[in-house]
Length: 281
Length: 281
Image (cartoon, rainbow over all chains, first blue to last red; front, side, top):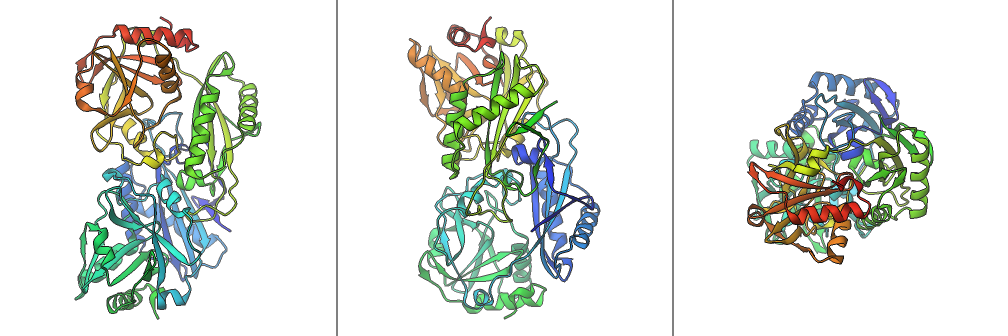
């Protein structure tokens, strides 16, 4: 079940000559709707703006997107206490050919979906993750932003996995840890928290940014650095972040058991206090 | 002006929950229609099949695609003496999330467009090309095939260019020559013809394959190798291939003048004889 809107009106489809269809030429944001309101909307709009800038598109006005999002959420008719909204921005209709027309008319579509909560046991005991076979290509021009050209994530997510595996971690082609297929990752070694710098590939998630700001304000801190496989192998704690589920401890990586430790617990508790209610134990 | 068809019936749009829209999860082929018939259809269908295999999708039957293409071409109502058909294959409708549903239902759409001929002077005197600023990321899993996730080509094609520049050549992130934004490239040094191996990134074009088979059968030959910038800098002749325009000589690369030489002329003549009529001078 999903409901899509364009400027407050229900729509089901996009023209075939839209450049999202033809070339993945656009961006999206996936926003948690909690108690009827979009969570961390400002951070999502900031990333969308950055993405437009990187793609050479004029960003839509934050005011207009906010208005369209509110209209979609209020009209969707599904339970908006706990839902997901997706903002899809494409470079719009185009003639055949990669080059954009001289005058680009952005197409904005808003989808609202029921959200699926992650089981309380996963927040308490952690989730199991694997390392994906496919590597992320190094393309600094697209690093950090959330484009519609997502085949690497599609292939990573479609790799065969044991049913209990919740997420796949992705390395880049130079064997650095980058992120999960749908999440960011934090690694704890000797109580030092690190998370991969998202400068060559990968998506810089909104929840990652929120957790980074909590860590910066607190006593734990976090270094944003290049993370080689060895650091991950030696980690004492690992946790995932994502705009929908918040923070989830990892209890197993590719078969190796990990503790759900003190640092992860502390960050989950801070996240819960700051509005990421899913993390409250 | 464009006309899109699904199974012989006119369509204008794709459902918003189609994975082509959401994730660029699919493939396309752009086929020259000459005198009402698709050119090199078998090669296009072979690449489509390879692409499906690489993406983990069951390829549509060649017979079905051929039938749908013929129906679209016969019904489009535009001049099919000289037209372009585009076959778009997506992994179809999906729920939210990168992972494909257990049962994938491919969506096939066929578009028919009027073709724009390249000026005779360009075949005779050559075209001017530049080197794009953006580099192609190295992702062997997607090399050679023509996916719907094409942001690198979009950004390359949208770089500012002098109006007389016909095409942009693309290097990979390790500074090897790969291809043009919409073409493949052949380089001649001391009468030795080479073309980049498309193993790390780039699209292996159907016209490239046709020209390679002509070269293999003839006396000129061609080596498919890694091409560093230096080889391009020292080239005596360079030419481009593409399914629509056939073969075009390059007369200028980033300001450096080149001759339209004997080797290029010979290959254009062979191409013309083999059915690529645009190359007849």
